[in-house]
Figure 1 (tube, rainbow, N blue to C red):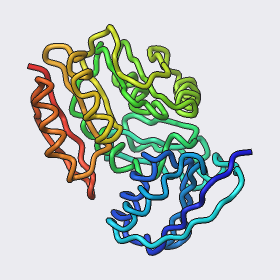
Figure 2: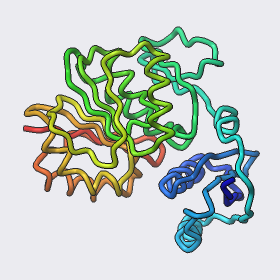
Figure 3: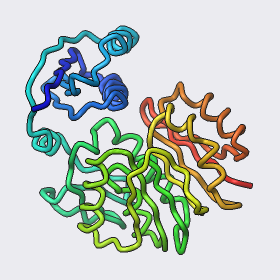
Figure 4: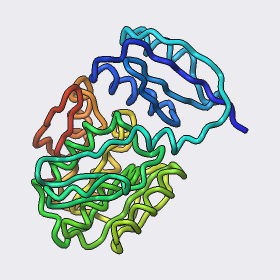
Length: 273
């Protein structure tokens, strides 16, 4: 049975600070989060916990914390208890099967919440969906890089995409994405386990809701897979990431078109000329 480090973060009553820490801990491989008042608990496998890195991150963000070792838990029960629907204007909503239907939106996505979906991703998911609402997916070929639960790919199919590829490097995400495709009756999405975006295909639209580190590493790979006139949406980014991502976009030979912000998070749209 695996051993875990429980990180209890104190004074997390500010939404921005809480979501920032969730995003950073997710990059380190956190297996779940639990909120109790102004305390946020995160769980990371002992073998992958980087104590020095975490101490630096906590100090930089002015966060106090305590650490303890625990045995394996039912992470899905923790995840499910924390999952809340995401509703984007009158355009789309993501909910779990145990939530009531959301009838006020054009597109509704029903998912099984597991470790591949975290509360800290709500702002970025929201912006990605807002930006998707501005695009025409009819008969488009779409690439969802870092698909997670597969929700953006599901939305793209519902919006009319004819062929979609979603990849992720996490077994939980692959399993969860396939469950969610079935739950939403999707038939045009292929899910693959991969740790890099290189494919032999070209795409009209690329969706990449991941993080700065991954986007900087693979921006050129993504750019060469974008058809002429194609669009790429990038998120999983904080405000301070914008300059570096813009520079990477230019170096990759594509054009920055727009940046939108929500709380401390940003979503960027770029295109191939």
